[in-house]
Length: 478
Image (tube, rainbow, N blue to C red; front, top):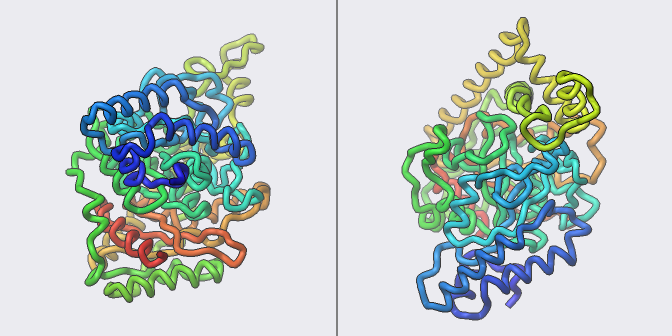
């Protein structure tokens, strides 16, 4: 039995049968991290004391013959924008260097309460700003499928860790595509829950009206399992929805015959790589063969999604990141002779170039005289984008699109051209702005062996439907 490639179900079965222990599983993964992560750079810190203590608890339950919790012994990695007591939380930034949060993120606490073993914190673009994971202050992450390529961003460390066998699953965050895009680049499954489905308490905010926490897994069923554990209301987050949590695993296993699948024409135009187009069209054909009705639809305001996203996200970032000033968290420049000088020098030394660029863009968009022209207008266009999806979902059960315009690109290929980098999110940001849910699931490889992903989008709080269609796509790959 290869302990480095187990699914959640296989992990639980191996523990129940006595084939392995939670401690052995954790140690196998730590050994692999020590051996291989030097060339990938996915982990920023390890939480061995906490992980091995949790593993010992699970082993004691198994030895006593007590019922095991749903995630018993499952080794997980956590993106470094999520807080964990006992571990640093840098958000990939120098400005949070040395900061140890005094509380657990709600999603993290729920996973551990369900038996998961938290191995450590994973690399990411600084404050989750990036499409390639080249903006981390602690060095870029390399794609395990091709080390000269990016893993996608900003949750590149989370996607790479699963793809490399450093954990069974991981948590990332998605603001404009940061779970779905790296999942596609690394050949794993990534789930974007509806905004408000999973509590954001303990998430270091980038853009609060867009940020969401979701899992990276080796298959669709594992993603459904983790969502079922994390979803639900939270007394610590007033924006976490009280909408009932469904049995996502059961919903994901239902047949898809008779479902109506929408295919938006705007997602198959200029700029889409031909191999990706062919793979996505093959998945659509597979769904048709499984009994789905395929319908062409239109999302007419799609072309405004990228500029709308970068106005709203940067505006919210400029507000959220104002709290990092050297007074309360992490880094403080001690050479300044005045308070204002300390603020200025701390922020200059602590923030990287991409974060500074977005703070400046966002501050400009919110400034007096420009608010109506940029931020207010962007929010109005956001409403139009949302209405596009609501109108489409009146006629179809789910929407299928390409996940990325190209396969994983080479490290450094787009670092000097931020606009080209932003366009890597062209198929993801509209769903982010609309607040709907989605799944990125592998659907093939290029001739070079680079993974290709397909995106399945669902209505608000209809993750079960998105996972059901994603499961059918996954089944067709076997």
